[in-house]
Length: 211
Ligand code: TYD
Image (cartoon, rainbow, N blue to C red):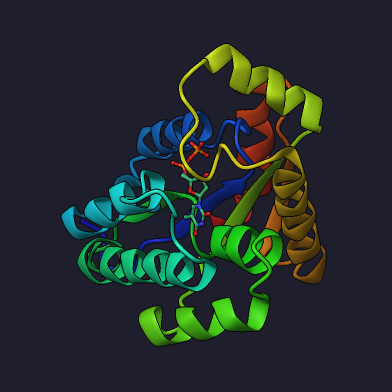
């Protein structure tokens, strides 16, 4: 086992961007290089955070969560996930590949939800000491391409996925603005193409992190 700290790579993007597939392909490629990897997701990843995930994606009661409560629940899930899974893994030298992280809260709750970036960053500072991934892979594609992929997947939309197209357009715009504001921190990847094509782009983008 390596004594060096592991690397933390987050996948971000809208619905249907192929994050889960790409997280799995990246993990396989890293393992083939002898790297110990854990793949996880947000909201979720630990028993506590998975319980919060259920509350978020299928809100009890007809009214759903008000925006501030929703942002707090995502932040609470993230704090638990970091404390009980991500930080311990990194400390023992395991790499963490995470399907969504704080930039999802910044794009969905902060941007599309209207709470603003400062509020989300303040929650993240409080819950998770402002932890940043070593790299964020932002999967981007046209609304039409991603919608076609979602339709092909054919599962029922959860409470957030089921929001109107304009909400999801605002999410995409917010992700774009975050990436433009931090070109070092984000790798913007064209998510349109075969999984293998997209994977090749990702491996190229993270080459600098590889041992
Ligand atoms: P996810 O399971 O990644 O859904 P999908 O596979 O459809 O992309 O995430 C569940 C939903 O939660 C998704 O609609 C995005 C939303 N979300 C937020 O709104 N804020 C967050 O901080 C996170 C992590 C997810």
